[in-house]
Length: 527
Image 1 (tube, one colour):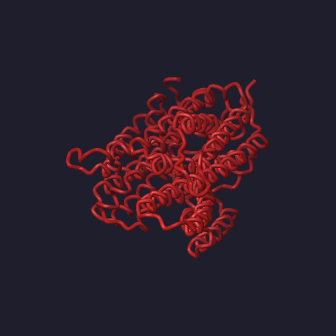
Image 2 (image 1 turned 60 degrees about the horizontal axis):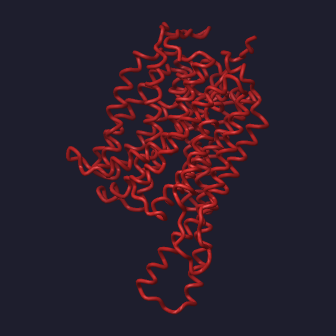
Image 3 (image 1 turned 90 degrees about the vertical axis):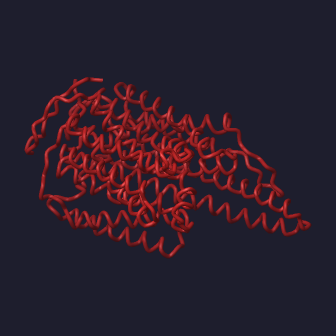
């Protein structure tokens, strides 16, 4: 990678003086911040039972520790991306990291449920400011071509591996026996504090500031867009647990859609829209957003169902379950690295198209996990080495091949003053897509749980009365097999979603690899 580069401010904008940067350290800083933001979506998952006991949180409210972060993050990404464009991306990046660090401190020291949930929401706000700014900083700091491609490969690897790293780190920290007199689950929050503060303090040293456009914030658009996304993300998240017929789910989705329609009307009329619709007029960019919406919808569900399968059916401990996903981290790093080299010579359509096909094959492989649907069911489990790990590696490698080219094409040739909102749209597509995918696949699995549970209960009623020990053993085996069947059905639907992403890429992603080596909103192929 090029060691240094100077960045030039766009014409027509008043920008701070630009200086030569050490690109290696700039990328390290951005990548650490992005990894911290992404892994926090999963790092607390394994700690939930311990948090519930310590803070006396009800089962109904426990899920808010996870969904509270996702809701704030997903609904504020568009606003966060635009704020970076208007007030300086480095400044917003630093503010986001500082908020994230303070929120992590509050979460780690929380003594009751309201404080912890508030801290998670505040973490989501910090992440929504920092994440799109990080992606935009790569776009504006690294020159188009191999240097930017490699930077995007590292960024994509951090984004994809973050969930797996979160599970591993969360399992390890939670299992520690009160180091320094602190409960292990609190370390899943406190570990972010020094990282966030150090990254924020180093930003002025390794990153240039972008131009600012104060006074152009579209407040009506910000309010309606944020509340609309909040309604949609909350409705989708709730649908995954309460079902699509739930009154609150329907009301939230309807309110969210109505607000987004109002948001669209506002954006078509204001002089400085929060979301300029010209971002979507480029076919390649629009198809990149759609692909980035569909692919995470399937990938996030893999983590959700497979982590439960490994623990509840195969009997892995939390830490062992986290380590089981370690090959995912390796696979996505390898895939992203290969993609960054290939994209200099091969059109993005072929790289990401093949990547989505490989990922779809992995999800289909997960759908073949063995389960016994006969009655009475036998205790059947899959083998990690032959039935799970190969498909984890396939999924990771496929996602590495997919994320790098699609991220490049999603933000390439955007106007410099719109790179933040473009990054925000891309991140929003990932978050909303993940929420929708989880809701849809959870519905598929839940329907299987319900139907098969009724069949088993009716069949069991016709048998001689078992002993309590027999009844307990039967119930455990039946529950495991029903969960496996529901999960395999969800994986199958997930593979179809991934194939849909592949179709979009093969048909619509038509940018040439030579064009990715050019800069500017109207990039011209260099000859």
